[in-house]
Length: 239
Image (cartoon, rainbow, N blue to C red; front, side, top):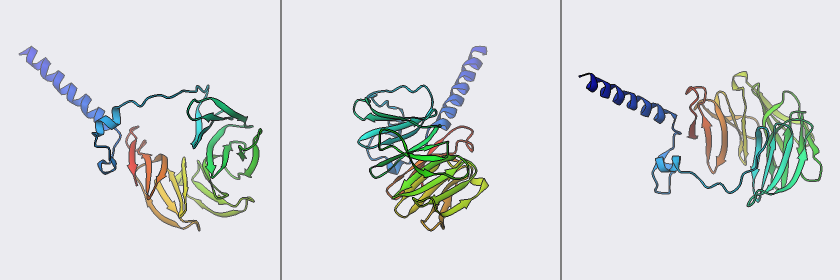
């Protein structure tokens, strides 16, 4: 009888572990899976590592086109060969790099010293001056600078630094996501995702939980969300 009880307890424990594992699994919308493979295979298969470049500190900026552009917490910015990882160019900012972004052929690095630098020559050149709090993220769209900060402020400025418009909401703190498109911009924060048109009017808002990262995919916005709401478990949301 004791042995049977022990076996039963082990079975219950295994089920509990399985439930916790499922709860930590990224949520994938089946309609977006077009390869015919199972969700489990897509989530757990390992992709081959083409190359790896070590950084002594956290890397916070990344842009990939024909080349790989990146920056880190001590202001080091690199341009790497996409096929081999070989170092092609490097720059050093006067402060921490907070973002690396692209506007057509132009590449920019946001810095905690309050400036945005163009990575076009042998040395970084100041392209924009930032006002207010240090940025959580920034985008440059056809020369227009868009910045979100940790306190819930989003600012859109012209190339000469003149402010077009600004939104402030302390609830929308930790503005780690800012993405631009032809019809407006997306602001992700502690209170979810909001879309604004280029006049500054809010088009819509949705709250899948705090949005930590995101990108535009056609008419959809793909975001990682819900870290705080789900107790540290992040979901992949299609919005």
